Image (cartoon, each protein chain N blue to C red):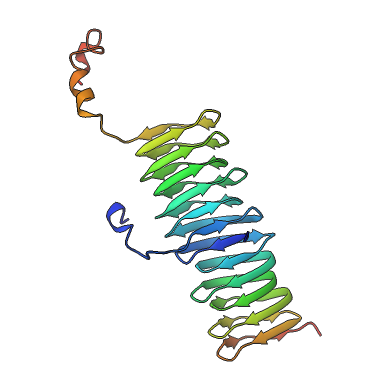
Length: 104
Length: 141
């Protein structure tokens, strides 16, 4: 079963660490460290520095992102912050502002 | 803030949230909908929905929810609008304020229980004339 789900009514202010998958549909402010896939759903609001194995952004993220594997910015997603990842996709319809470091 | 009357009609299906076994949260958790904790939370939890603290989970902080089921570890005070169930596997230290408290055999509990309820009418009437009054005449009701 899925590791952690932060539902759309829920707000967490602080630090989240997880060894498993995390799905955010609600609001997170602070810091988010996931040793697994992290999904930020459409409608979610994240104001946090993010570290994850892989990251999918369909919602709204403000903060710096470091992913061990990849970052996918989906259509409708919005990311403001610097991205450090070896692979990055930005879909048509996504918004992005920040620097990209692909570790080359 | 707004309690009781306004809690139910926010978002009809505010999805259930889950803090998984491998997850750890330090900080404040608040909002609508139900929450199940299997991991660890250090901080206060304030919910309009139901809260479940599973066996193996640990929560350190004050808790406010519409109902609460504790099967894991909880250290902190609880305010609940509905029933509070402390299961056999629970280890709980803190005070409980709720309308109804269920404490199962085997649970470790240290604290106060303050369940707010009205005595049934027949009880509050009879105590004056029956068992309790012969020795404690000044008790009133």
